[in-house]
Length: 383
Ligand code: COA
Image 1: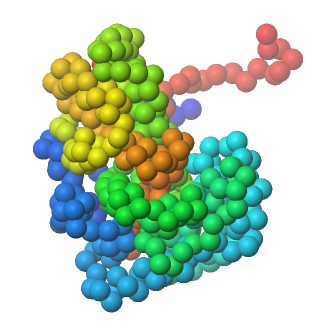
Image 2: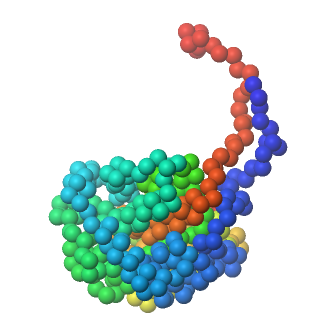
Image 3: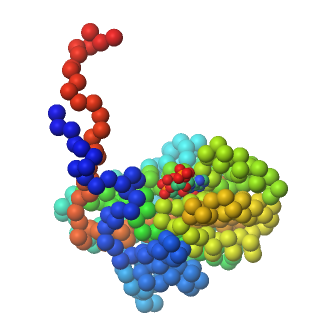
């Protein structure tokens, strides 16, 4: 039996420090805490752009003209409507399931409803068209699942509303306030892309086999769900509620660190400085959120963590303060990660399309480190 030696291939645990693609979508400087979408800093996008415009920019590489943005927005509005079969399908999902599982299932269903041609026959335009359909449909699926699990009617999409506003409308069946729509729009602009993160890498791998866009996005959703990635935001709010008040923060954190527990919402593979998205969301939370006790607790947790771990490059990441934005507009906690998916899908589609233009299948190696020359013992003779 051939045994591969550790020296045969380069190895990096968790692929740390490895570049897996060349991309012109998002630039991150982790040492200085800088995030740039296609040449424009995230702070500028957060202040000036909308989710629709940001998605267009990420996908097509240039800011749209009024006409282009209008056309793109109309396309999304058309795709976001749920047909009767889709609604029927959602009503049959187990109500007690996690919304991320519902979302994964719905995107799979969408791929079966309108099956794309085999990968080698699919054009870039067709691949992208499926991507736009998914970007538009994901918020409708998430909102409809929430209605169904609460025994309420599914709310039809409203063409007069923006991407963020329509999601809130379909979720609750009431027109959102201007402020709620703005907060959600800001949060989804901030989360729309983040370079080669774990879920985007999953999308790259799936798409690189010339698989279809639906399978690509399902891979991304499955990867985003985990607590080390998009699932962290739900756990941050749960942790702050468990701590209860600022005076209990220090004891709680020191105890958790003594037990070698990870504190959710802190640390990042790339950022060794303050995550710029967390800064924007923290400012928002301090100014606007009514959850004063929870914010005071979060700020105290941050101080204790920085005192203990900032010399290791551990700072709050985007998930530490994003929950405040969602909580302030009445979104249920288990919908925080689906909202991350509602946003990140633009980045997943943009990367999949970009990579498809110069595709090469991902096929790394594993270094075999296990037994060799083992005799096969018949089952009757095994103890
Ligand atoms: N709380 C406490 N310690 C942390 C930590 C956290 N949130 N994040 C990292 N560390 C420590 C690790 O214990 C490890 O310490 P050691 O060197 O003494 O063993 C060191 O920092 C490196 O951590 P590691 O898990 O190897 O870093 P990574 O680059 O593989 O992982 C994350 C990055 C994001 C997965 C990690 O920081 C984490 O689990 N954070 C919490 C989950 C989270 O908020 N995820 C959302 C990311 S946007």
